[in-house]
Length: 122
Picture 1 (spheres, one colour):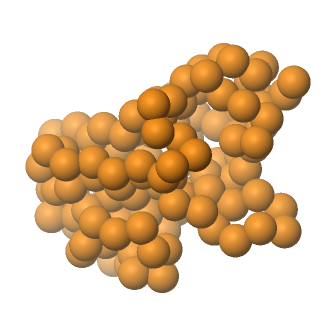
Picture 2 (cartoon, rainbow, N blue to C red):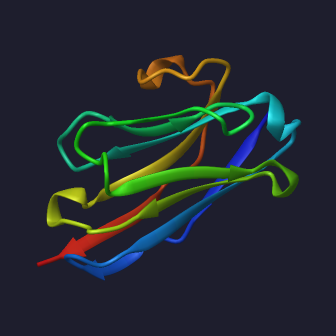
Picture 3 (cartoon, rainbow, N blue to C red):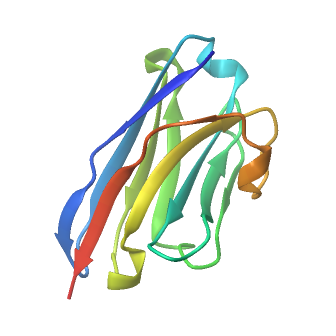
């Protein structure tokens, strides 16, 4: 089993920045594709970003392109999501996920963290 723990969420003003972290344990981190998803109340889970095992390939949801950056440090078993120019519509619970394929469909990821709340005020 793989355990994922997100951190770094909180309250931030519109236009501000926040950096989320996800620490993995229980399995060799470098074998896992990592992703970030978010879910606002009453809405479906939305793809945010994904990164390949080596970190050489990334993918982003259209709503966050140019504002968010996903990265990973395999030596620390950690993946990050740097969020800049935050908007109120970015408010959601953000989930870290791990899987075998770098895809945008949440159901295809195998492991999930508990989530961390991000709230952007206007």
